[in-house]
Image (spheres, each protein chain N blue to C red):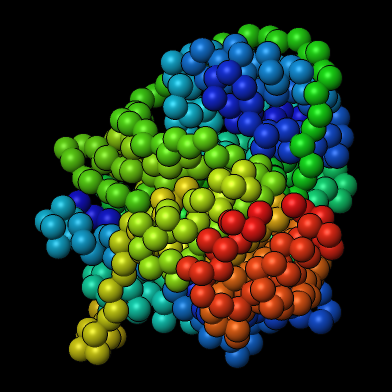
Length: 309
Length: 249
């Protein structure tokens, strides 16, 4: 069996999520080739070659792949697909965009966001915001899979795969890149952070969110998350949202501040190792999943916690 | 320009679902059903484009059991013009849904199809992208802003690192994210009016699409539960427990 893993990268390195998807690919079993598609992405290809378990890296270096637009990237993957039984990727925004397009072009039903590999063709995946877990067997000859990375450990380094250049597959020009407005931050990424401090609607404003949550996060070297309510209210940017339709995280420590705990939010964080909830409402559902709950005014508790650390 | 908006009838987002004891699925009998929340955002966006003079007609389509008519009527009550129900009691996977929708697109010739980015029941997040692939159209997924220009749409997308703006040639597929808009509620007079709006019923067979599932569902289970822990009385006690008991600090 041969597996093609689509890498998520910034041109110079591959993301932690790719390493986690690689673990899932290895569990499916077979030779794993990593596809690095980008513009000026030799560094990322070299980094992918060092991941343990990778037997070859395919580098498609072309302007068409600079911004991971779905249409040219899907066409590239399809052009390479003949040699592979499984096409897999971490369920990042890029892969969620491109992989179903690949699947439909190959007439395959994608298996989204697997959390466990049961056997080569059978996987477990959450449905209903993680309130039920389905075991599904794919009957398609070729499998297209995305991986929920919070459920897998990252692959280590130690590999020395060859990097092979593959040719671009053209660009029909159906869409074009206009601009990025990406958050820049020195904090760890939400999906790979060991500690996350998350804020909810109780923070009351964007200013308070920053004033209260950020110092605690920085003291802990933590990533910052937010509930949907806080993002909708404009207290936090969209890329901080944790939940069913935002990011799914599983850090060692998740501190939920002023988050009531709607099922959609719990779906994104309930696999965290240790959960702390700080909320003034002692009936808040978040306490039902929290290992440690502290009932009280977060505007007093959080600064106090920051000082105590 | 005509806009096509596919909508799905799903368990209401406020309902805590229950897994059937025999592991064959999720209990759907006597459970409140509603329009998938992302599809409400799609309907709203289409309505706003019509109100802004960018669209002339909004056609809503649903694939599902006879009761999915209620979901279409909800969209008609919000202001959509007419509905199409492709009636089936089978579970239709995203790939088959995309194939049926391709048939509807070929019959209706819309300039834009707006879909929710995912349905909150199977959480697949596939149908829009698959439809774009089958039609060989461009796609702009996870939209938080949509502007229609001459022959193209400018779409701001919610991505992992923040926002990305792309231009996509029309006709195109757009899938909606949470921040695109806040859907309106249907007024009582509009709910009454919606009952008289045209609704065509069709069968999957008319589209010649094979609905056989590609994924065999072997089992549906409750997730591993988490038990509530302890309440601590002070910040000092919390820090102590995190250091000694949990060992995470």
